[in-house]
Length: 256
View 1 (cartoon, helix red, strand yellow):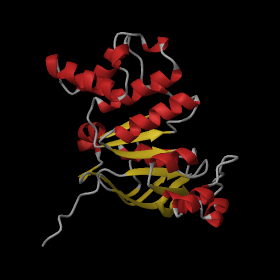
View 2 (cartoon, rainbow, N blue to C red):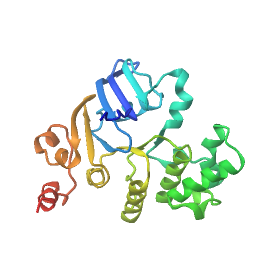
View 3 (cartoon, rainbow, N blue to C red):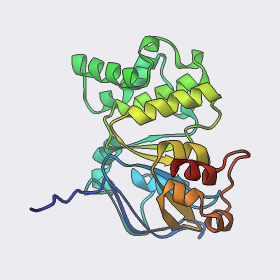
């Protein structure tokens, strides 16, 4: 019996990039993310994480190597479709919310794809329902709490029906209740997720797999619990566990 071969949602093959000032940020990155995976991208400041994310929807173009999204190369003539497939939620929700109401913000992307009328209303309602913000559709975004604005920012991306959701530090500046609510939402989404974070407990809670980027190269790729309990790896790449969080104890309990 032939096993069907799946096309990875993300496929980075030898991606290298240097900024115009000569700073080399990526040195031949290889990374595959399969449909339905939830993957954490970890690494110290300056590792190249943001640079890598900006390659995924063509904001930056690789100096060497190739990025593909579900088999479609990221290049100029494909950018409209690539940006529909790759939904990026930035760290500050106010970078994505600029209309007079939540509904208008969530409708903005699909409208730019030419979607109108009942189909647009359905997209907006579906995206807001997915993040638990349906009751806030007519509220101005600036009247919402920070955690609510972050959920609406996620909805603006979900309304495009992306193939992969990329979240940059989604738990930052959230109170514990908002952090938990967002985790519950992300677990319930039927979409591939790449989570860029310094929040190692959040990575363990949400992502079975973690990739560590350091010095512009992938230095580890495996189960998140294995990465977080590799003390030598963690020390070498300045990955710090928060006080009181002990993945070794969690692993020991899971093996009882």
